[in-house]
Length: 543
Image (tube, rainbow, N blue to C red; front, side):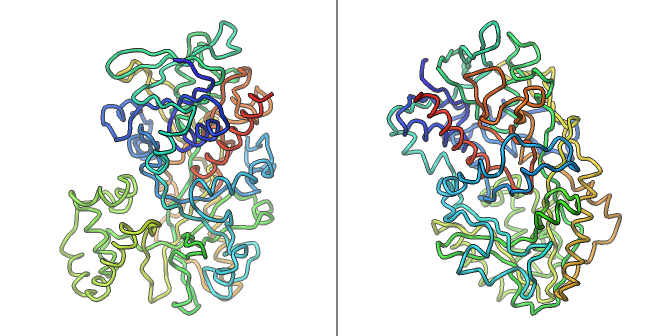
């Protein structure tokens, strides 16, 4: 097969960059390992060896080899990186980006359009209809901000939503069920000459193009580069021994409740909506100045429900949610499996105490079930989740923070191969003391701010806080860092335009290129960078 541009991977980044370039008149071939529907045999190609399964979810829970990629299991949360993420921060090792915030921020509105999240506004002060609403009435912004927001997509399943456009856009072809197993280069490794691909039936296809874009996801992109060893024995892009290093996700969990002294009915504990009908969630965050002064990793917090698996919460609504999600028949039909497992926990299924909660709280449960079912399953813009108001004005505080880059946190090739003969990954995600220190310091600052303004306080859960944070630290959903961006080839894998150093016609559209993980999940930013790459490549092809 021949084409002008070959894009490997039909997740959000691959779909966006392929459609953007095809709309501009370029011939594009979009290559996807899976098809329109999930397939267990294809999905198993991505299985990996994990050094510590308690720190990293199985790849089958975090990825999808299918048209639409991980958007098939994505919850819809959209939030960009902050200006602080691109600042020079000497207290965060190896955190210097080769671009400024101003280089990527202009793409946020276009990314929002792809996600159908309305305006690219992520602070309540920028949205007139909710400007007056913050998490806690009377709590002003200062070092701590209560005005920052995250926005929620429809959610957008890119494979389903853009299926018609993928099928009808002139110049765009899709090759399904075709897995790229090697990127081939010339003898000097200065240019890609082709892609070697295989099907599950054993047949092999070679693809040639002028330009190649790898958009296989955070870790599969890295795996493909590592496995392309015919000319470069350590893998394409591994000139500095950084390919596969600096693997990052986020550090998250709960170590405290936040207790408010303000009127309970005025707490913005649930999702809000703007004039476009887009769901938003209020969060606690920090000002740029406070992060620099306190030497904090970037971190945010938001209010959540008590753990639904514990019947001690006494809520019929929460008990109904637990029984529904833990049901062997219904559970997997409601939400993505990874989210479901996190919600119900690992313990044995409990039934009778939850049924008792539902009977005691029957009026609230009876109202909730049909209302939530309608808003979740029968409308176009679905509610992302649900919240139960606390009469005591006490809520668990979920934190979600940046993971400090470390070269020892990495992925490598294992000795085991998948069905197509491609080496599987070995994943070794490591957290460090600074990650834990950042979580503790953030809670101290949130508590001080609440007390200073007489709005509330932080009450910690019983136990060793540091041990709690270390135990809860785990990820695998937000895969970043393993093909990091740099101006100097000695310090990274790709340049500021996402082109692999030294190879003029190979680009990566992946969160693996991110230098830091920030407080944001990666999906929104992947699309923003894919848009920037499409514009840049179009200019190159027009020259």
